[in-house]
Length: 114
Length: 116
Image (cartoon, rainbow over all chains, first blue to last red; front, side, top):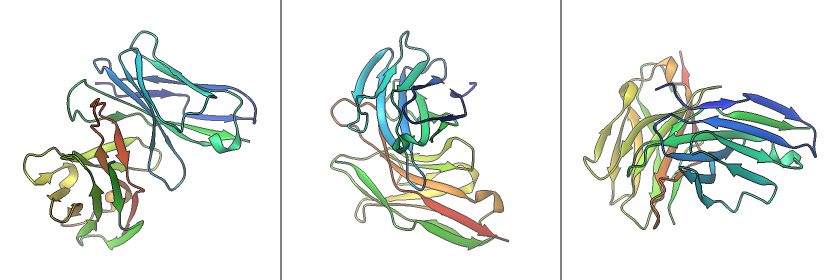
């Protein structure tokens, strides 16, 4: 168990630019989640994958956000035309496909939009 | 809809004294409840989980929590705080819905400060 890996750890970008983050889940985990955490708040659910299928998207995920998990392994989260309000920590988590299987979180990617 | 309310945004204790972090939940289902801890610049780590077995749940690092259905509470306790316990703590409920995605709903968090 090498844990959930996220890259990059930090990203600073100018408003209007596109950014892409990567998440490598624990290898035998079918489920993958993206969350967003702003300062002083708990993480908020963004989207969920079961293998390569994106099965749920939060209303928080505007049209500028897109996530993929092409082969059911790693996942990417892209934000187009970034805005200052997108500044946050983006967390990825994975779990086994079992009821109440705990989520394992990565260390996150901290995005700062200037 | 599921939700959790953490009653204190900040708790300060002295090293060696008991810790109590309070959490109330709202759920139309039989809930699964968790506590996660987040140390600075580290990922979220699962402390313990309740999934309708024993109501008193023991976790890592000496933490435990008791599920009280009558009070809709799931408070986290530890008999004796250690300096390394200083962190952000999140009470979390699982949202089974109809699809059982395992999606988690987090509380706002409680910052635990431990004074020497």
